[in-house]
Every structure is written in C-alpha cells, then in structure tokens.
Length: 239
Image 1 (spheres, helix red, strand yellow):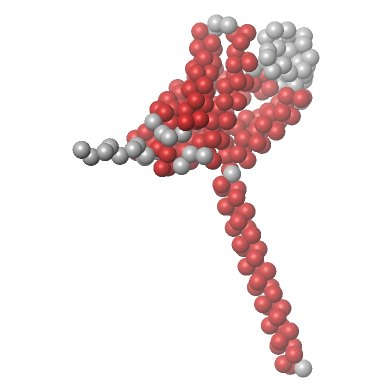
Image 2 (tube, rainbow, N blue to C red):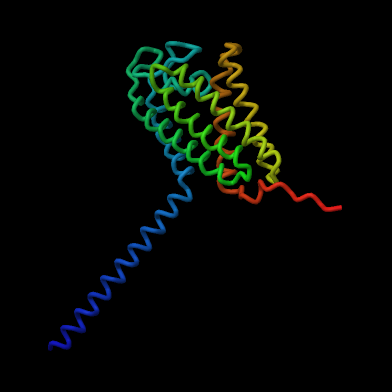
C-alpha cells in the first residue's frame, strides 16, 4: 500500500509539474504574441473605442451646428473630446474617445520606438525614435483645453521624425512602402498647411481621415514587412 501511495503521489506530482510547465510556456507564448503584435493591438483597440465614440457623438459640425451625429466629412477627430457636441447636447462618447486616443498614441509611439531599431544610422534612428514618441506623447494633450499648443508641439516632433523615416524608406528596398510614404507625407503636410494657414478648412476633416488611413497602412507595412536588412545601403562595387 505504501508503494502504491508513493507511485500515485509521484504521478500526481509529475502531472502538476507538467501542467505548471505547460502553463508557463503558454503564458510565455502569449507574452511573445502580444509583444509581436503590440502596435496592431493598440491601433485596433483605438479604432474600436473611437468607433464607439463616433456612434455616441450627439451632433454638430463645422458645416452645421444643428446636425445630428458625427460626420466623417465635416467633423474633426477632436470633436469627440468635448463634454458636449457642437449642437450643445451631452456627449456620451467622450470617455470612449479619450480611451481610443490613448491607445492610438501608445500604438504610434510604440511603432516609432520599434521601427527605429531597424534603421542602421544611429543619429537618424534616435531622431525617429524619440521624435516620434514625443510627438504622440504631446498629441494625447489634444483631448484637453490646451489642444492647439499640444498639436503644435506634436507636429514639430512628428514631422521631424516622419521626414527622417521617409528619407530612410526612400533609400530602402521597400518599393510599395515608398509610394505609401510619399502619399502619407503629402497628406500630413497638407493637414498642417490647411490647419495653420486656415485655408480650405472645409476640406481639413476629410484630409485628416485620409492621412490616418495612409499612416496606419504605412505603419503596419513597416511593422510587418520591413526588416533591418531592407535599410542597409547596398555595398559599392570595387573597381
């Protein structure tokens, strides 16, 4: 009986140890998967929360203060951050918009941190990493009362980081991402021009949405397609 009890205890202990090991491996795999897709997860959560905020936005836009609901053509992203819509009704989607903006900034900030590791030039890599991260740190300030100041600081850091990354992408082997980069940079600078020059503001909301579409596409392309080797300049042939 003692021998049987010992054997039974041994099997139970072996089972528990194996289960703990499998759980540890499972947790490790989940951690690796989350780390690998962290940027995508953040951006997906941002789109989900912002989508809820859009659905709950009461109404009012630059085209009509009495309109109902959110207009992709006439409302800015920052329209979602007020406690009331432009039409004066309570904005029940404000908190969802805050959470969505948080994940959007974290996702883009994480992207600049990671993509900088693929750039072979140390100085350029640091500008891309810290300029991009600073840009979206200040961009989160757009949800508050200092919206204009936060956006201006974010634009300075963001355009610097984006320009450096744009140059390295143009020098890379990534042909499709070069085209995306040109379109993306064009819309980002167009947004800044329209905003600060106060020209054709009627077109700014839709330009803002288009720039986000191309930016997210570009970010995911660089995240999953680009490798460190793509940015290494080709060796010159010896004469």
